[in-house]
Amino acid sequence: MSLMGTAVSGMLGDTSWLTNISQNVSNSNTTGYKDANTDFATVIDAVGTSSSSGGGVEASVQNQNALQGSVVGTSTVTDLAVKGDGYFIVSDSSGDIYLTRNGSFTPDADGNLVNSAGYYLMGYNVQAGQASGTTNSLAGLTKVNTITAGEAATPSTTGTLSVNLPSSDATYTGTLPSANVSGSSSTEETSVTVYDNLGAAHTLNVYYTKTGDDTWDVDVFDAADSTSTTGSGFPYSEELYSGTTTFSATNGDMSSVTTNSGVGASSSGNSITFDVPNGQSLTINLGESTQLASAFTVNTSTVNGNAASSLSGVSIASNGTLDFEYSNGSTSAGYDVPLATVASEDNLTSINGNAFQANQMSGTIRVGTAGTGGFGTIASSSLEDSTVDLATELTDMIQAQSAYQANSKVFQAGADLLDILNNLKS
Image (tube, rainbow, N blue to C red):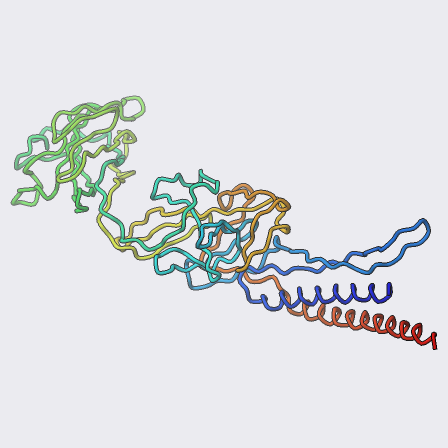
């Protein structure tokens, strides 16, 4: 009976091996699947001082979740692959959190990114005020949604205008822009684009006029308000801002700005503030401007705000930042897609759909930004292949089948011995 019991444990172990091989082979094309090994351990019925009684073998499956599969390119931007350590954080329809390497995400009817197994990609909603790259916890995660009504119109409120004013320019002696009459002129000029409450663009003409050593007037007008018949700009129906800036004679840096007049005009430090027509109060930082012995140059000219625009697509960076791309060419950060891992990846509990759940053996989930803190990077328009090697699996299948057959022969031998013993009575 001991002989037959040992053989049975061998057949059961080989059956477990064949079952695991079958699981690997059936998932050879499953995105992000990690093949598993079958390990065997001796079982002893009784241990004596000089001999032991064999009890057979015990089989166990050893996951290899930390293996890296080949990353192949696709034509879908929302197909994602992890290069290195880490898992995508996903949830099911009940909101339960899981980990997966299956990054075959596409928008569902509601615009939520869901993979081929039905799990929703989770991330931090930057547009809802979650700071990019600073949360790094399961708290606050939400479904990543890539369908919106488009980018709403946003009025301009802040900006930066940095120029170099030539120190060699002569002091201007003509009619200043602040006079706002036909014949007004300036030493240098540029323009910036701003947006009002309805998203309409306004081109603001900015004039710089040298009025003395290290002193320049700065005047701002809405180009649409020009009533000039000669194309010179002047006069305008109203002036938005008029002020005076001073520069250091030692290093050419801006020293101060003083407001003279304008619609809602004021100044603070080296910034000027005025009202955009049909818009908001706009503050522009002039502090990086200089007066140096070189040509007039616009170094920085940026103002926030945008016109209303429809969503044209998304892009996903290697650190998990998902940007919305709009038909007007602008972009805005939509979500941060984090990665997660555990201390013992191979001990994660496997869940249907090539997903995993943390447990006491695996350790708690640690969340972080892709490309930092030991986490791998995220590749967009890519998927991770299964790590199954069919040649290896088929070879193991032959070995498992042979081992099962050998154990069955041992079982048959035991059965024959029982028949002999039973026949001794007669």
